[in-house]
Image 1 (tube, rainbow, N blue to C red):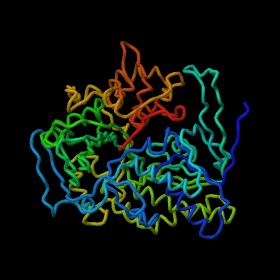
Image 2 (image 1 turned 45 degrees about the vertical axis):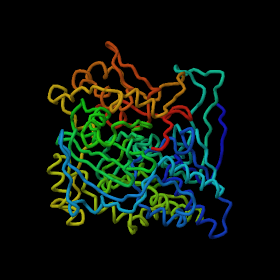
Image 3 (image 1 turned 180 degrees about the vertical axis):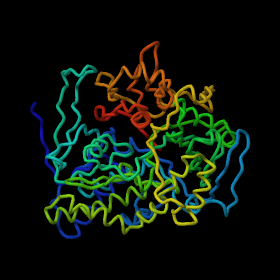
Image 4 (image 1 turned 135 degrees about the horizontal axis):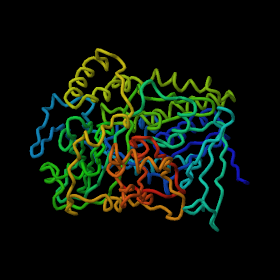
Length: 539
């Protein structure tokens, strides 16, 4: 098959905060030495830059200050500024606020900007383009190009195949983009990064673990601008890691969301329904009552921390952002770390290009720079945080307090953790999650929320949710775990119709929960045609 080939010096996969920061920083470094002939290309699977970006998000501006010091004067999109912080424990009907001195330093955000990651990344994309960096939206990568074990680029998805994989009249084979250096910044559980880590055995000392976060943006009757609330407890049981947030935005809007750990062991855990149930609490009901839900989205969050980070460099490549695990769950933040990872990678790439040596030995300066950076210091202090909650909420909170006092160390340094899917109890040994009743005013079924995510896919294309052993779904998974895919997916992609599994791929919001939480690891999320998926706005 004849494929078009494009050659560039640096290819960046995924237009997110990490890759765009990498591209901008690399351009700055090259311009500083008068070397402006390096070709860079950022490819993005979403229809527009920012469409697949979702976060809370209260931004720590430290990395942004380093990258673009005048960002405040250049139209950077801010949705609010934190004026108060609250940490609350919820029971089914009551809410107990932690006294100010008991709010962890990492959750004290006074004066920090509240942002939409979608709007922030769109802004960064425009900044990158203004520097002469090419940014192509609607360009999904399908597979890595190799020369032995050296990465030499990425092949794009074939366009114009029908649902059976047959060529339509619109068929176009995916282009091969060859590069001296490829930067993988696909976000959480990136499909190409997954291939890379498995092939080259790059996994960290601990496996990566994940949460699924569901988010809505509401227009409310009485705004609470600048008010930030984080919650523990209801509706999560003590074995399930997670919590909620309420961020008061300008213009009578609020950002709300619930994050649910995928290692609770209960195969009926349904992050979307837990999120809807959380909104029925009097604290949330008072804020939302009389308002209107505007937007919905969901994504996974890599939460394993320092010990779960893969080796993030090698021959011809670097990994940045969520794909490399740059998230601090102790602070509930990752955007600034993602940006810093991209900037550190850019410095290593500039050195490699100057030497005309893109080997792992040269690109290892990325890791060296990380080890002496504030990003390493921050992540290392939280290195055992997530593992501390494996035994439940109370032991986790006690361990978290001890770690904060001792700089991350507890009795055993490097606490171990297992992959999320290894935690499942058999269906008969787990209490089923109660069924949710939706009122379509405060609480919504999954399909209604998916509508508010703007999700659209070409219907007549190969399914991008590849079940490698379908018989397992009908036999072992049904008998042992009751098919948890029908519960954990926050977009109702997986449904049982009689005795067969129906995959509604067009509902998929690209959160990757199924790729993480499937008990047999037989669901493989691959990229669909370019431009498909959610169209997140304000998220």
